[in-house]
Length: 201
Image (cartoon, rainbow, N blue to C red; front, side, top):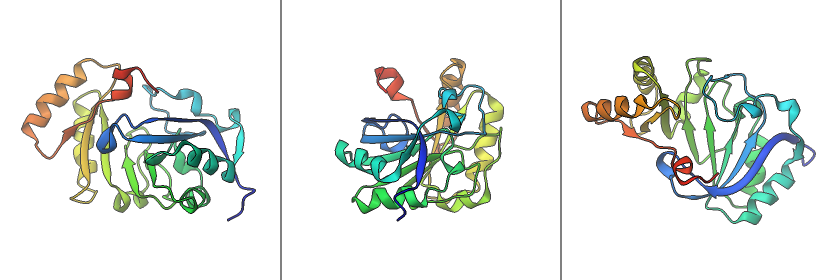
């Protein structure tokens, strides 16, 4: 492992996972800078420009994660797959930790992950390398078109991948849209951003 490798870090913090299958789990988050997907409703737009965020050595990032003593370490963004994640995941795993990824899949897959949360966006279609890596599919829904997109994506992931529909936070009607859809489509579950409900990071 080349310990001189660095990544642009927007922030690291210790909290709980707020969404999906691991909701409520003790987690250390590593938010990498850089994103070219540019969802209009993104709640971390400050992460888009990687050049605005300081570079940190992978050994320091991994040590900070270890010091927090989390159940899982989550690499998120931005869009983390803009970067080669092999060195970062190797450093974290070397210290004996479980590593999760949150990605839109818009770039070629890299890294060694224990769990992959795939949240595809229509704004920048996913790279084909993501589909056989998916542990859970999580589609943010604001309208009927997003439900149709979710179904197309669901056809491309493994049958045992957990399937979630998540209301777009700033679109109140999306909750009812998803609720009614899931009642008719039992292969889907609803995912809520519980960290926002609890007003934690």
